[in-house]
Amino acid sequence: MLKIGALVSGGGTNLQAIMDAVDSGDIDGKIVTVVSNRKDAYALERAKKNNIETAWISKKQFSSVDEYEDALIEHFKSRDVGLIVFAGFMVILTSKFTDAFKNKIINIHPSLIPSFCGQGFYGLKVHEAALEKGVKVTGATVHFVDSGADTGPIIAQKAVEVEEGDTPEILQKRVMEQAEWVIFPEAVRLFAEGKLIVENNIVRRVE
Image (cartoon, rainbow, N blue to C red):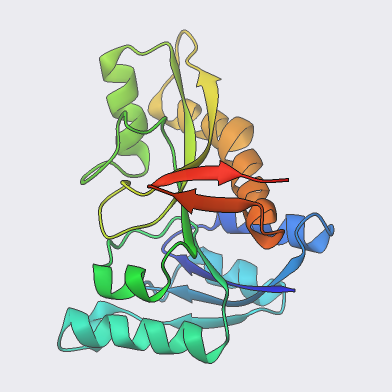
């Protein structure tokens, strides 16, 4: 059974989608720890309600990024975590962390990468940019995490139509419901079943 760790910063709706898929048996795995850089992140409460270990590990607790990432690496390795999910995690980590778990970290981003991604594109800002550009279709992307911002190999994408009268908040909710909460648990399921292979920075799905 795959041991899953999560990094979170906010409300944890994507974490909830994965917890639900684990609880229903869709994912052959167990979330063993949820770590936040914010002590007040509601995602930690969601984990506690599910009897999952939680931890607060923040850059503010350390004198350098190196020490911070060492602490994160030690935390996940000591729990024998085989996959780390970034479920609304708002910190960009360096290659020190991503190389320690190469092709074992996945993230959900609320756009169709390469559109509206990278530094500065997070949360509502992504949807604000999509509406300002006037795109007719947006969506979400699940990808492996490397040391760049939203640059890792793409696992899955799902399109969502932009509708007349959409606000960033309305669009955000639709993208979550129709795309994020669908493809993120599905990507974790495929990983747990050993069906995702990365070759030349491209993800291949095997059956």
